[in-house]
Image (cartoon, rainbow, N blue to C red):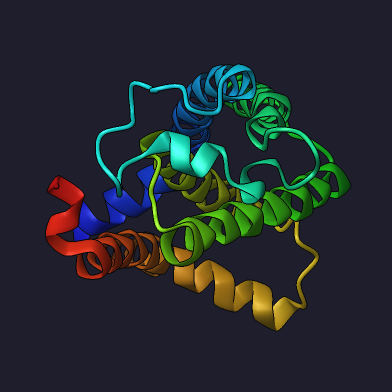
Length: 206
């Protein structure tokens, strides 16, 4: 059993797994951002447009898309995804090819994507508790952003790119060996599912 766990641990540290997961997740986010951008243009032409993902009062891209939160910076938030995700995809492809970026570059990527991660969750909680509606494509962005953030953080901790103090770096590596990051992300995502179901209940299917 310990031999199997050790193999799993080694595999989770490989560039193939980490950058492959990052590439897949960023690809999903790019697709979702593109669809949301098209929807945003449609809503700009006709705010009452009946989008394909307007399913009911709770699952409604139109309700979310016409809120002020959807264009916080004066343009649709989805445009940010069209800008950011190709950069992540480039990093992932380069990582799969064996490219090792400078530590300063990876630290900057971590900082910028952390801001994007926080922004994505701000939008999620605004949709949940202020707007009162959920957008399936936005939820996909939240999921994929989480996975990219986790894999990018894993890479940077593994490679010592975050310039942590030696003691903190050793603790981080020990956590990675124990799979703490995988446990946390699974628990976090399950928690979000429970939160959505408990908050909206049968209205999700209404």
